[in-house]
Image 1 (tube, rainbow, N blue to C red):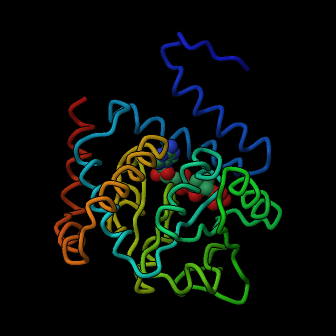
Image 2: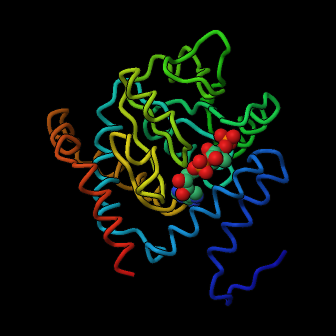
Image 3: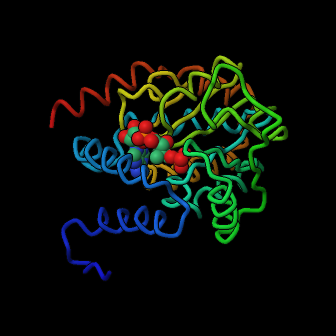
Length: 245
Ligand code: PTJ
């Protein structure tokens, strides 16, 4: 379908199309459409722009990712449909693997997501392995790759559902998420939550990482940045922002 550029909701409709096409091509789960609608509603209340609090969280997330020993980028069907190029770029910038990890179990979809990411330039994409699990999780998301999430210290988990952030934390990992809903379980349990649309936050995160790399910040400087981050405070300020609208 051709969406005229003059349409007042052009950007939003284009993003909708990405997720709808993702479902049609078997990358995103049909449930991803519902998740997307929920995200759109929260984005409305945020004024559909990256707020100051999200900018602070992006800075902290960049510092944490750069100081990680074994960072991993976890990818589900919705994230792959919305930001494949940006996920591949983040993987390159951090020399970190992308690991497919989906809630609605499907081997076929995992393979499709992998080749979709590779089409957009990803070089290191891992798949889950039924012989390796993380603890404290019952769903399909417990299966992980031995060279990826299993051994990781920091996991980037954008657009996530439910209980995995909490389980990853209980497994001793630090968790960074992007979630438009500051009240979600994932937002509340993660180490760092970026309350923003994944389509806006991903390019900003890459820019911040590039900036920190250029500045050649030391371990200590990076640590000071992410240790200073108060996730509860930033979540509260996103909720306050929504109330103001
Ligand atoms: O591919 P699968 O099988 O792993 O399934 C992926 C989905 C997203 C369907 C699954 O994880 C799910 O059902 O997620 P939830 O429980 O709907 O949670 C998704 C969260 O992402 C919600 O809190 C939404 O508000 C949020 N969200 C939706 N769209 C965006 C978003 N956050 C950031 N950017 C978006 N574009």
